[in-house]
Image (cartoon, rainbow, N blue to C red; front, side):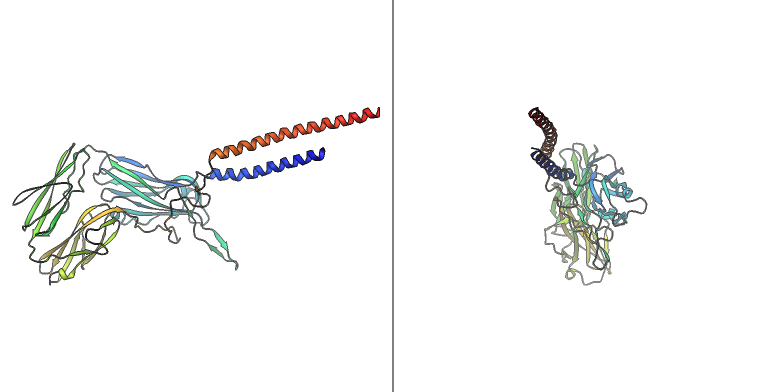
Length: 457
């Protein structure tokens, strides 16, 4: 009986050991789920209240393990917002040791407000240091430049862990590429609105010079209306009074001259006027033509897409050209070139008219024009790099198996609860079972001893 009892005790201990060995990694595994890091812009929405007002947006990170470095491609509309301040947050800085321990850089500082784009990099200076937890990566300060209804600040993120080191057969040490940490999402944005009850602000667009018979696009898309049921009305004289409606309107001028076109924008909060000058010259001379490299007539291009504009030299006059002045139609400064080619990238969607003034050395100017339609944005900005690491490939936002940050297989908490309950039940039951069997063994020994003594008597 004692042999059988010892065998049962051993089996129970083995069972308990197996259960504990199984539940511990499961508990660690389940605890790690839901801890996939997330990076965001905070606040996710902001209501501006005045022109020239300043507000801050923070880049925050949560639930990260072993962060060595990060990069953010941040974009905004430079016509209505300006990035005026940028400071490093204390998350990576404090955990990496303080002063001189991180490499915080701002790669687009010189041109960021012309392009509406900046690339921010940060990494620890030592290869094996890293930070874990949640905190602030950086703080950006924006200034409101002019009226608008709504705009967005967008950011794309890349997170990297510390680079592992390997000892080569010859004894030398080599560093592997930094592993990518996959966040919940690689993108974030903040929606900014300007709360105002002011009347509309009309904008009739840039002045144009065209030849007779050319269809002119009148563009009021830069106008601002915060009221209800806005209307756009264009009026001018071309022999008789002409009236056009719509934010975008077209008209063909058949007679040379200078035309003053008035745009009236009206809504429930009031009305406003804006004028634009359309100069129409005689079409006896064939006007110069502009081509856009890789873009066919009428094709929609993307925000941030760098476009190459070229004037067909065969359409120029047989006179030496002094310079070419390119007007892009998007409030950016004119570009002056000494040849027939210029490049430009638009930072927001819309319809734009490109005008080129061609100045000949004999004092006579000629003009060329073309239309550009800019559609949805694409991420054509440079791929972020951190420190001396190689270019980081775009990161798939779907979960992947990376340093415990993978959420691709999440064990439901209900199953974990059942496993814990069963384990506790087995442990408690085993204790009581052992205690009862010990008592039974003691009683059995007493009975056997009593029987022996009785037989002796």
